[in-house]
Image (cartoon, rainbow, N blue to C red):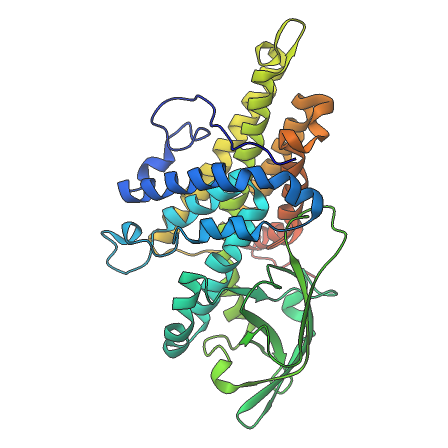
Length: 405
């Protein structure tokens, strides 16, 4: 049975985000705030009622998600006011991801697969000609793409272990390989396919249409987490693409890592949103649930857990905000992105567990939202760099010692 549209809790009037105690969102322009409010309205009215069935049936609500896509959150003219570089601000990019993930982590991840990962593959990896060809479709979603990097046998060690191959023959490349966990990969038009050049052993990236000859895609079945996400397995068998579809600015793992460094900040924002979403779901429940003659929100042990959840929500937002602030200034640091992802993953996980605690037995029922956040945060905790890999990136920065192997 579908839910009713979500009704916002009656928090302090005028706040952009209820969990934003320190008002970080005030940095947004009036136009950006208008777009965020429109996004929240669509999420609450059109997407929220679909989420339980989507999770239960492991089916992505694509028809309803189109209403979010139609908002043009990547190039609405209000987002470009005062932006001399013609790009939306890092603050809005972050709060866009935060807002969607606060409703549902799968929706947020699906949106950023194109608006974050593939967008950066094109912007940072493509030549000017490739950007001019692909970017209009990225912005409109008519040419939606995904990053295809992780493999069945290579996740954390993908830098040195990538098994997908690229072999040049004249003006063509022959691609072979098997990719896994590619969010939205069965629904995209383009793959940003990473493969190792057999001649120079360097990682390269190719823009490949999903419906190319030799490409097979299918959804990984029977997932416990991220059930509604169409995580694709992608198999390339002697797929031929012209040199013009090789990303001209990705010629080594260092170039690929440059893209990942940028997109890891998106994950920090998604996790901040999911942390806030778990908190708000728990808060709604405890205000409505009565035991011993009054709402359980009035009990000391419950309020202690709520305070911790609120603190985690604010802390994850604060670290994501500072990361966006640095990137808005042109400062991109791998260790900063890794710390944000690592910290926010831990705090999101804790919030999901605390939310489950305060909901008691009802915390396993989808109607109260907490199980979705608990399961999907577990998936987010692993993707875009595991806790362990990010800890080694941070450790390398502080010690000067590389400890990966």
